[in-house]
Image (cartoon, rainbow, N blue to C red; front, side):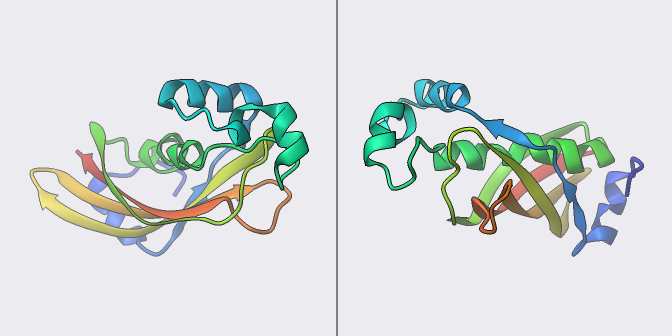
Length: 153
């Protein structure tokens, strides 16, 4: 599926892995920026010295919701670019599970599988993807989630 296809043909690929995103580094700067934006300044995310002393992870870790937020840009990279809709709007999430923490400095990527495409009329499609955010060098993924979005032709 390397070429751009009409949005109306996306349903033919239900059940297929659509691709794997580029690696994204979750360094301390990005974690601190997320803490600033959300007001979530829990020490396990932002206090490197304390995390080194007291955290079972030996360092700070990325917020789970920061990792979850990466579904959108990685979906644009892998899926949205292939169907080139006019616009895409988040519709919701299902079955979100955080399996492993992402230690500061680690790289993650999203493995995306197309699980459903439902025509909604007027050139709109409800697209559901299964997303697995993998952590480089680790067996357990950071998270798994089904994401729903409305694609508009």
